Image (cartoon, rainbow, N blue to C red; front, side):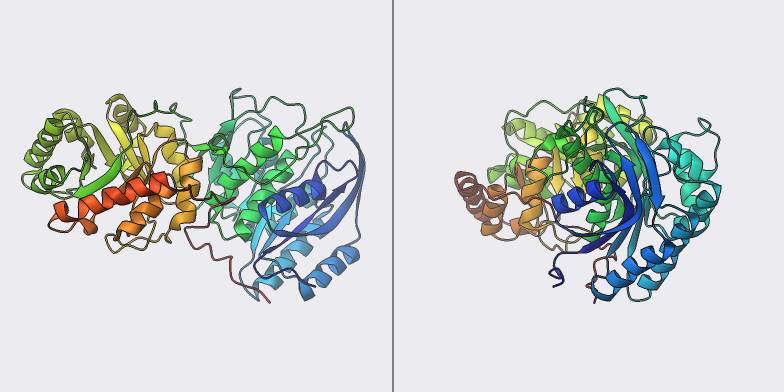
Length: 518
């Protein structure tokens, strides 16, 4: 009987590890942890233990074809992931199958180019490398080499290029997205840095280095977790965030098995914010430490477009306000008057976008979108960090969440929680499930924003753990009439039972790989 249509199918075409550490064994554990159905296709049989690989025998081309033919008849995949491929003939066979599968609908291809064992034994000759470049990379949705593998795939001299340059070279050969993994590098002892280059984002994906000798199967776990996330509908950048989290969790659970390096052990992700990686804003690996815990929650967070409306909110009892005013002839006066009004009653004002004005006139904080922060460049972001302003940052996806947390924010906005007409945006509604996940995983206070029009929504957002809940259109022209009901809803939500945290968030962008396949 086929798996439920709600459980996506992933094919892994890789080697069988007799020690149970890497290859298809690690792929199976990663797939189980993220809740996808893995079809393990044996491309090579290895004789190995925890210290060395003693023999590798590729299966015949006929046997590889037979396995794929059988699966295509009953278990067509959303994602195909490759590991150890035993020959150029195998590589070209996989490429032909990707073309054939894509005739029926979208299929992602994740290429984990296993070119050598960790002990140094090589698996790929020149013909196989040429086949990778000519046949697989142009079809790849994501490629996940380590530094040495990236150099060989790109045909570069060892040590001549940094990871960003290698990723550019591999994308130049046709790969849509690349992650040059850094687990085997000692460049940053405290962190493991992977350079990711995707259609959505580029930067260093950083997680703490785990001091363990038991790391066998790390690369397989990373690639298979990314493949599983793609199968679940995440875009490449978000899939890599989840892969980084899954690999860190697996490393923390690594264990001895034999006399050498033991295997990592993938498992479902717990609600642990230390698993969430950081993502740099550029090629400088800058990761600010978390901001100190605030002394009060943001509570009802009103967003208005004039100093006059700021004063009306303050009169209604709101004590967290954002002045969202893009441009006006009296912009400076509006900012200055809003700051003065908030200071008079001990309220916190966040100025949207205009951080230098906010700093000049002494605002408590500033709110910026991610495009604005990217446009500042490294020097501008450094100046913002040094300004002392409390910083709020919008986030709509996992990679944006990972990137925002590197700026030591006072809060991270999760949105749109519900559909909103305030802004045109490509993001799917986050819903209460993603809001609860954000609140559990962000490692900083979270503000809920988007589509909040009724008191019941404010109560529900508070139950998810939101530090602040944004009111925009719901305030109307007479906020004094609505604010008491919204404050009561927030209080009720915080007194009620906490909403459950899902094991995984749902995707917030359409990846194109989530169509049901028959």
